[in-house]
Image 1 (cartoon, chains in turn brown, purple):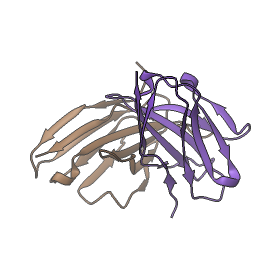
Image 2 (cartoon, chains in turn orange, blue):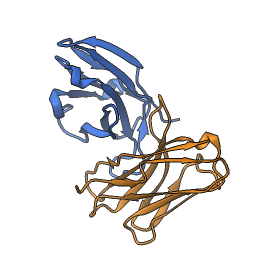
Image 3 (cartoon, chains in turn cyan, red):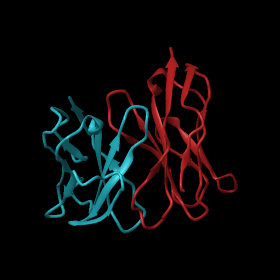
Image 4 (cartoon, one colour):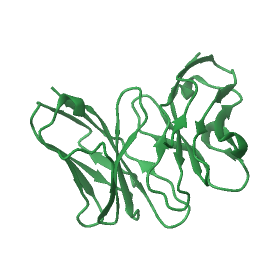
Length: 114
Length: 115
């Protein structure tokens, strides 16, 4: 399968713990996006990378959140000192620029903070 | 602020009924427009997209959408729905056409099709 993959698919953690999620984009895609989705809502943009450069971060992304894409391929999203309000589906998408392009989504990581 | 409005939050139809889901956006410049679908337990999949050209675009599974620039709308249609169309449908807009950064999403419409 050459689509976007995410790991883990599910994560349950206790409040205050740190968690890290991984996203592997479609191999030739140079842009990678992170979104958060809660029940009954559309995805909310968190941040995106072009190659290894993080070009934009949403105001939703507090200091507890950090994302990296060290080699311009896979990306990690870390949440430190998790809070119950962090419980959500974390989505990764990738795309190819320049040109007419579309974001393709992975299956997401569902986080539950107890 | 830029926003995307989906007028119907929940729609219930019987099989073979026609479907139209509304989507309006608030951006006056050039836009790229998308409809994504999320089937139960599955990830977001692209249904169709509009970048330029013919404002009537056809997507997968018999869906189509019409871009009406004067109305800032991109409504999704299907002439005859099936039970398998039960899903969440999201309209998304890229208000920076040619410089795709982030998509602005509607809240989604939950469609239930009764067999």
